[in-house]
Image (cartoon, rainbow, N blue to C red; front, side):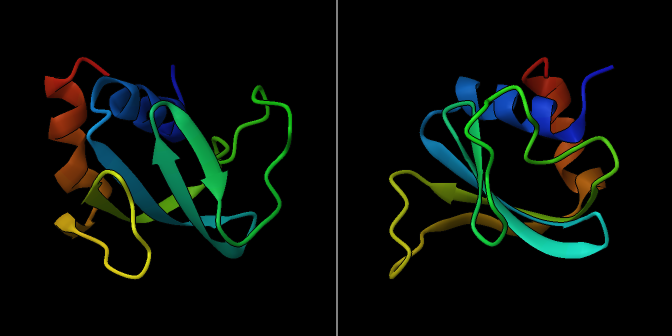
Length: 98
């Protein structure tokens, strides 16, 4: 089964007009991950150069997912839907076949 991160990356590849901003707990620490066009990058922790090493591992706990309009401008983010829970976001994944 695909991990949270895999599913979110797949969704973002199918929706290049969106940026996902994910708040999660990874290995007991808070992390904020940006996902765009199928790629993830941590905004707080180190991101491995190897794309096969997941930024959101299977044991991560998703706290919130925000959908933003691309391109992302950190000084003026354009939120489509802020602070969705995994349960709120999952129907979008299902609809996108992710």
